[in-house]
Image (spheres, rainbow, N blue to C red):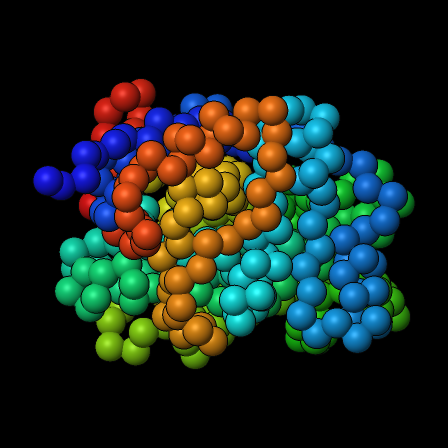
Length: 351
């Protein structure tokens, strides 16, 4: 007799997401229930904390802003954290980490697609068409600075009153930057050095923002030209992250890829600003189930690995029982191969 099937019905908070799997070897049903943002008021910048890791000699390190054991103790909710450290333990880099989500969401029978994420550091995932090998042939990497320099300039010219320029508002419409744009480096201290050099040349604050914004846009385009699949033209680029709303970045890409359709990730039913908030709770779910996410190509090792450190809450046995029932009797669950995204109870088809 075969093992009876079980559909996992689990709500993951981080995001609140719901996923049920009728076949543990292939298909994930997903629906975003609610999404929101809460601003933080840091006293020490992430740049300063990350720079300290390098000073201490850590060439592989990960900065996370919450401790799972405290979250579980204070909320009573089982918590999964430390995905980046888990990826490093598996022999990889710890970032980017969500190519699996891009590939499951965006893979297409015949089109080469890219998902460009512009947050502090920008990254891209290239998803070859299904005829080239489906989800497992995707690959991702950082393209360089995203909003990190632009945010540093915002803090500088507003005396810390603003953390960023909403939708690139300081330089609308976009203007060509001066010839000298500086080096593509990521720390606030180096951004401030670039500002100092620009001001010595009598550049206005708008010119400085335009220059630094062009660094991000140029880095993205240069990365595509160097690392995108060579035999296929990029048919579509799906933009996400805060920088996706900056027209001074997004208007530059079509100058070099005029035949490529460039849209927000929202067209797939996933809010452009919510992708990370969805993909990481997904990894929480996979940790509870005991299943690896799909591993992209072009990494140090393609070995499957269950990410995350589980901190038990008051609901731990209930959550664990649900996870174990999926694929009960199986010692190994292969990674998901398909994703169905639901909008208002209806499967969304973005093919």
